Image (cartoon, rainbow, N blue to C red; front, side, top):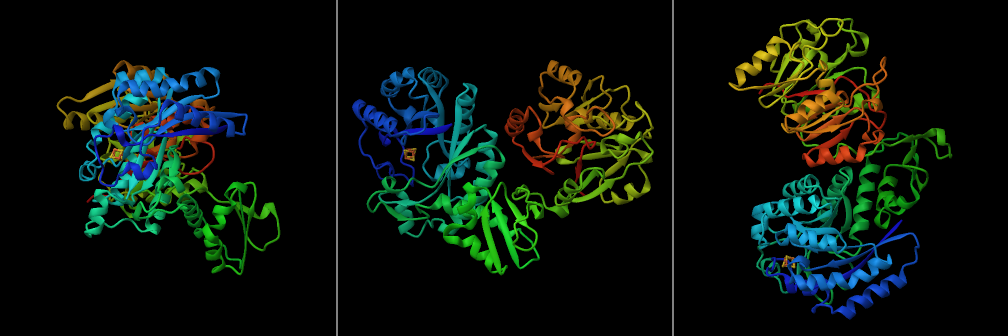
Length: 590
Ligand code: SF4
């Protein structure tokens, strides 16, 4: 289905502020509020021009501060659209506005009049930058407005700007993470430019502000685009509209280019193509038809770069992104699939992290996990029954997994492993792991904050002791499931993912939020199924998964749940989800 917006631009009449970079008159190209007749004829004109029959149409009130207009004026604009909604020729309304002009009552009214999407000009979530840009609101306002909009079931868009005065790219990445965490479905990325008759023009002319260079804006926008796409946030636009957005001599300086988005897509393909490491002097690259121009690159830049490395380069359309291994003959069997870039913005350094994982995971997952740290692989042994005998969560208990705080291990894990892990702050437990349940579950508990969750009948004494010693008041939740960690992932002290109904019930009765994943979709060789938490590890803000979430019916909702908890997903390979007995990340002793 084709999506059409009918844009109605409103000037800054409603905005009591003047952000340092803003001269809305120049940016919208309009200086007066459109009247009812103008809005109607805009809608009619656009509707006549739409060719696709299978379409979704929204009237979009852009520019300025829609919810800052007098309520009667807002309602009058929305009422113009009502007959079109009733006839079904328009499907909904969207608007852009400021975060500090959102309250529950207004949002409910907007919703009742057909508002489907609200875009907030967040620009940055850094309070210092917001203040210095004269935005007149704080991050708290962005957070509160986002919660109200999402809570009403309206689609949230959060726009961001790059290269603001007093800003840097670390702040921009944090803004992007906040946008994901606040539940936005859409974003727009606007590199900051200097427009005539603004405070920013004065700062620029006084030498107090330097805008991003065009290439910096392309590079940073590409990284953000990649991040948003990985996190299911749709990027609606990169850079300001062309032609009528910036009229006359309004542009003073900065990374404005009518082909900015094209340059960004070209850069993203350039990054992928740089990773090709073929020995042949001839190379054939296939990409989906709609990506062909981007792959060749803006003004052919990507192809030219490849031609510096290969004598002959062919980039052509094909079913997916594939690279021929050698020669230029067409031979589908001779193509290899290229995995998407998944590790581009991971922050923890690989030398700084030890990982404990099952050696039975697929080779590609092993290879990718090795990029995240130094891995100690557990091989299958006869210590426990075969399907779990290489599983870390049978032999190790990890308190506060995300931050790798304390690890207790079974005394019979073996010298090879304890030697390999000697640089870690780990402590020997009491009970040895036995061959059969319940002797296999002493360490399979979840501990976070002062809370311990396990079938407490079987918990190793050293774990109970740890909780008794650490907190005068530890909270212990008893569940029937002895394999608690296999079935439970603690994103934080209040939010959990489980594949066990019994655990879900106990945690919900205690006021926690629990997301349930049907275990029948999870592979565990030797059993009918495994459990989703057993496919996962936690480190900092990441959920690391052995397999791809696309194989889950709950994929979309689960991704949202993880995102809302401020976390990102790393899929170790593209295949089925395999219960590998959890993956533990532990930082070496300081
Ligand atoms: S809030 Fe928007 S309209 Fe108001 S001054 Fe800032 S950029 Fe301009």
